[in-house]
Image 1 (cartoon, protein in one colour):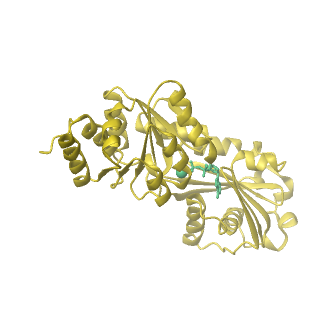
Image 2 (cartoon, helix red, strand yellow; image 1 turned 90 degrees about the vertical axis):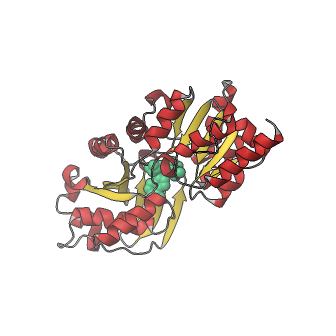
Image 3 (spheres, rainbow, N blue to C red; image 1 turned 135 degrees about the horizontal axis):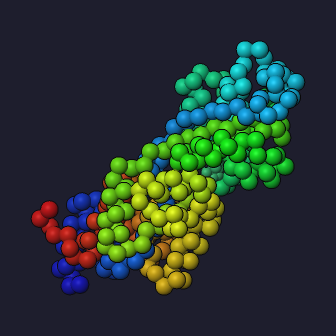
Length: 316
Ligand code: ADP
Ligand code: MG
């Protein structure tokens, strides 16, 4: 492109909230062949809401038949329903975490008037969940792997987990003192324009992938809502594996445009042919990215490509 074309493209971008880090980036974007979207906060709003609290143990474990009084001691007085206990234990543990999933559980417990305490100690297990010492006992909240690695059988919760995951929710297991206690689930709305963004990209001939640490079933349910093919879903990707997914795409000979917002996404943004930070993305993500989309709209990915290709005129 001529210097004038570059200036015009940069100016159009700046005016419409698409910031290119230099003229070389502006030229490169149009050559992207595969777009890799992070799920949470990129295709979804990233504002989780606690939607479900299910007590599991009381149905399956004879020791819990009386509301768990034997197992739970003082924690399970006659007044305490098991759902309340599940939520109280989960929220008390999650007080130790800054994760959006954790914040939604704590906020949901607050709204429901459930008692929450600060954990006396906690340990975040990245990509898996949290382990915390609470007044209830030792609490685990997280995915199947977290509980299984602690030697807890997750089968009694499987039907419930699968039902919630098919609804596109993030379902998390709750255990207390090595005993399965229940399930909590958070929902996150898909962004209104995500489907249009995906279909516009596919119409332009690009492949669209979705990347997430969330489990496969939840990921597929969300992918279906936005029009991404199941074979293009990369789920259960650990935070430090996200960059490898991008490198994989590029090893296959495709120029990858990675779109994400989180601290976790920074290495993948840096590894991509074009790294794109979206919306209220964290500073770390913006720093690692080549393009910043100021608005929280995934359609601006298409706009960035069109500006780069010179097909978005000033008059629009
Ligand atoms: P993403 O950033 O894609 O949302 P993460 O890698 O942070 O995913 O987490 C992957 C999975 O690990 C979550 O879907 C959840 O099952 C579990 N997990 C992570 N952190 C927590 C937490 N604080 N509480 C409960 N579960 C968690
Ligand atoms: Mg994320």
